Length: 127
Image 1 (cartoon, rainbow, N blue to C red):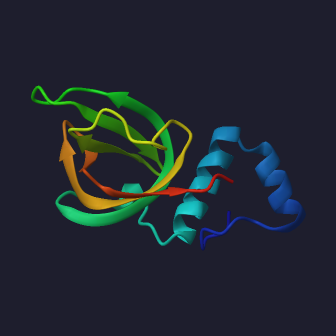
Image 2 (cartoon, rainbow, N blue to C red):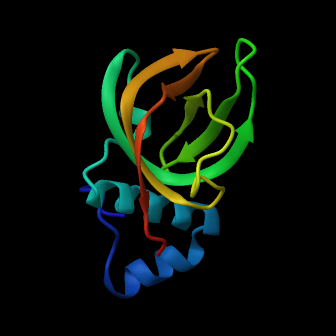
């Protein structure tokens, strides 16, 4: 990568990508995709402020909170993860592992993890 954060081009860039682990290449692609949508990198999100984030859902689980159902999804953008939590929901059509999602809402930190409750979301087309 160059110092500006753009991928190297040409033969040097090709060999650099060839020598990089697959997970590093995928993380870089996710960061670039999120940047193109105008999203803030999750690593840059702080607590108690509204942000727009985008990435791929890694996991989706149903986990009760306070006796009520809550659908939780872990969103990864190549820089960090954030938990998206929809309170009172057991299922949301399209919210499934591997899906590309753009979400907007208030970011808080609970138990050392970034969390966004009841975010607005947009299902993005896959690449």
